[in-house]
Image (tube, rainbow, N blue to C red; front, side):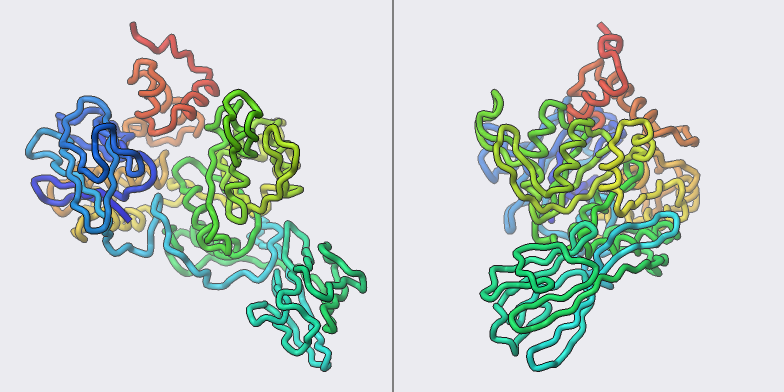
Length: 559
């Protein structure tokens, strides 16, 4: 992992993880790294960890020292054994003097949160069942498993219970039948699929029989018998309800929290990760929905395949169908080559549909068909393509209200709302604030030089309402490390984002988004690209917000 180390007077003061996204540096409170020196511009510089070296800069050469008045971008390509790059981003000798990317990494704290990729995680109790539904009110997980009684030709019997099986003579199978020479090496499989169990023959020599009928693929009834070679198998499907209890731990993978709500969340995520159940994440911006989605993927059997994320609210309406389902060459004017949509890209992996509530109704119909049939058809295509992607959806809207107002299909809602996971806002679990703040102090401290919070600083964090949730808390701790003059962070070092400063009452999420968009557009004098950089969102996302809130750009511009 690479990171940026920030130095003031040749002393390390903070580190910042390098991720795929562009990192923005400046005085603006919405910057990834907010600096407070007088000669730092509002949007001072951008660092693109995965970009290309600008024209005229040879590969591997360190970017030049630079003193921009506006945003500039440099590609950083740290390599093992390579010299560290250095970039001066202010002229004041007493200010920040170096930004260093390094391929080396401090030992990571296993209790990582918000924005940090989790290590591969082994679930403490792998889920053997096919999850059907999670009842939020009762805290009950409804699942089913299949019970098999295998009778070998010799008469010996053995029982198994699980949500899926591979059956054959090879030792790698879940049920290895070594005493029956008429059983193929990989004879057949049983797998759970959206509330049903599928039996599939794997091109066996002697075939697979369900209730004496030879099959290639079939849905299993509640009970019956199978024949593989000369081996007889009785089966029956069991449904069970399990009430989930709060976990004892105060951290789970990348998540941290001692509150009951978070520990209940840990138990649910642990049970769901090992399954292939569709998950619907709800919660306000900044609560960590994508972080949870990635963690579920990383702890699932699909972790070796792709995790593909798409923001359904940020894609232009004329491109969303192509982005989801792909297109054939020549299907429209700019389709110069075949394009695989996100469903194909996530085949055998996980597809994260962020802001699913923003998807147009006509596309919801197409999505429902894909979920029901597991087939997609590219724009301009003539053939259906089989896809196998686990769906994790997320929204900061109330989908139930959208269904009532006919803005979201009810049948699609029930297909997605199999396992609802609600991420509580930070203001509803303030007891977790000291724990999370301590984590960020450790994670962001350079060279293990951790700073501490004074009582006044801690009380100020607890008194704030956190409209930006955990993401805002991380940014606030990051700013405090830059502002602190000693090892102890005092009350004055805690500076909140401008749009939240002085506001203790919680604003509706839509109102927050509207105010943020308006403030950014006013600062940028109506320039959408500049305002998008201020907000740290893509231009298409801001354009969508302008359309959604019916903002008149011309009335904002000052001639």
